[in-house]
Amino acid sequence: MRFKDVFSIMGPSMIGPSSSHTAGAARLGLAARQALGGQPDEADIIFSGSFAETYMGHGTDLAVTAGLLGCAPDDDRIRDSIALAEAAGMKLRFGTELRPGGHPNTVRFILRKGEQETTMIGCSIGGGNVEIVNVDGFDVKFGADCPTLLVNHRDMAGTVAAMALIVGRVDLNIRAMEVDRQSRSGRALTVMEMDQSVPLEVRRELQALPQVERVRLVDLNQEEGQE
Image (cartoon, rainbow, N blue to C red; front, side):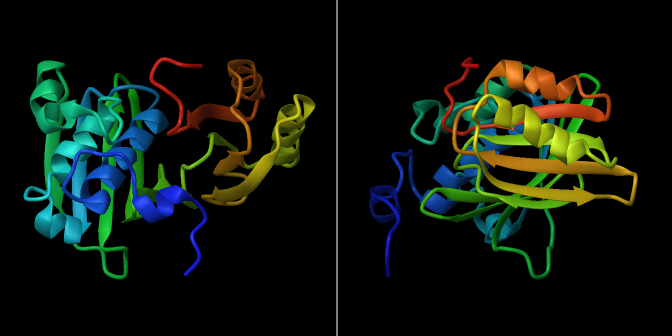
């Protein structure tokens, strides 16, 4: 077996007991927080597979809640995250469900902040690594291991080209791109995984496109409060 980096061999710096059930779960919570655009007021967290069977014993509920609070996998606050979330006014609801054929370590988020709602399905695939497989009902796939733009827009001719032109003008390189749409000329979601951090000005320019509804950045390497 070949490893792409030292992280793949040694695993992440984390609060135990399991890289899949705690480190990966914390990263999924953080990705969901960023997809929402901030700390949720309400969070429905639904586990499936082995997550559903062992989430309390392995602290997976604590880990995903810590991620929703903006904590990294090695943050000592993970142990007290549920109490901290409740003290911050976050309403938490945990549940389980059967998802035939899905990854065994899967969690579905339904998050609300004011009038904004975001849904996300993600999997903890081992060693603290994660894979997002659905955002707001759109089937997409990305690892959240690099700065990733989520752009909700209307499915209109030239939209993707216009977005690529904006990021290209400032020498940002698109590592991978994926588009899913509800229907022809309906709502769509474009996911752009980037090689570099994405300046706030670029996100604002994307948001200013008339066919764009919402722009978000998922960057698990970005410290809380950075732009």
